[in-house]
Image (tube, rainbow, N blue to C red; front, top):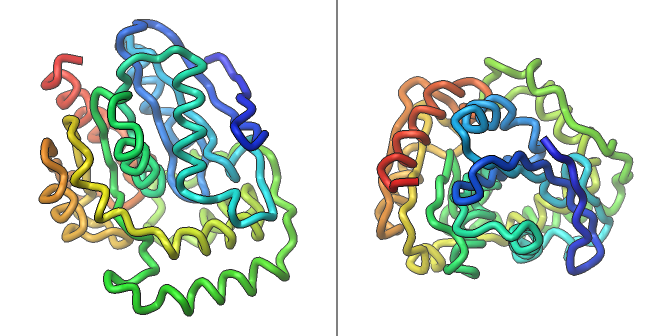
Length: 273
């Protein structure tokens, strides 16, 4: 794997790693909220061994990428811009983009805004809104105020490093040690600022703009984003298919890599990638 930094449009430094094999077959991996690219270790190794080129990045505010005290730094459009700049810089043509949880939201937004770049999408245990917001937005204003207040008094002391995800294999959807690790690696302030931005996200109007083959993978026991949400995404994204991994929870990237890899590989074969 080759490690690199890209200076984004707002001078944020975005860290990513790539392994180049087949120049016509790129898989781009986006991790979930509070995580980093290391969460994809097993999946990247698997597809690298199959001859695919892979690229994974630390989303801004995560891992080795830049953090900020400014809430606007964490606008969803900025994550999409970072991704486009990296794809352009590496001259990647028609990649398949995979996103888990928040990474799936970034993937959906990216596709709606830049519809001609990707060949296909793979959305894993994701949604159109964060899990702490009701479908009708009843809690949105209240939660934005809470997150803003907490972020104002919180230090920005996160570490610029990658978590050891091996210690969290087998964990439940809500695991205090894993959540503490997420916060300590992003900083409490960045974590809360991103939560505040997330509270205003609603991607439902964008799904009609996604017109590439899309695989939606859902853990049957996911309590963060229940099955109804995956079915909703499937109903709204035209060229989508839904694959349910029985017994898997929200952390299936860590807990069910073999099942996830087989689901992804089957889809890639189906689209002749």
